Image: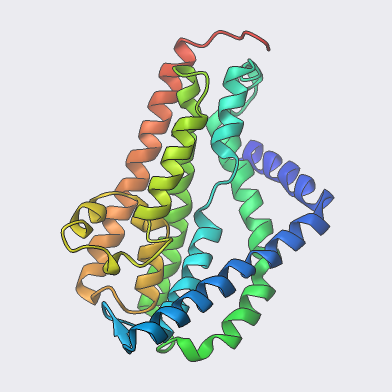
Length: 267
């Protein structure tokens, strides 16, 4: 635990060294939210409907904001490319002799990065939530709120494992850019990041419900908005936890298999 905390302190220092750029990025990400709000405004005005697939206009606005919150916890920009570069360039060797291996080190760094980002974005998120309070149906009860916070933590774990697995594919395929591009497109669509899964064709939704992607965007947002029936929440949280545990086990297994065939060319 002390070793992981040491890496986290290094990550804190790294982020704070570029705090101007970091804070600017935290604020500018809300530009995309404004675009989405205008888009849904146009959709509802053009359709002349007050509800689409169980979502009111306010629900859509609140959903877009909550998805941004979910992705703030779950997104792992640069993780896969960083891991792949360590393998491809031979610098993975340093992790084989250090107290923490590649996976615990990257997990510690990402946790620290998220902690700093969320701390810096707390005020902007709060301001935006205040101005969008009209869109929310109400504040969820303690049980739902607790389930929502748990779902965000598990979303972080799931997306970390997914991107780490993509990175360690470099043990078998030195260039993983194509895999990463395809995986990002699939995740963007299947997670509900683009639109709520409820709006997709009925035959497709059950298949997307099986995959882990919905837990990184759609599920936390829908849970907060009360779109998930109360009797289904424990089951969904259990399934999300199983995905998190299963993906972590897969990441660890593939890393050990990959290290067995690793050659430190370039390191």
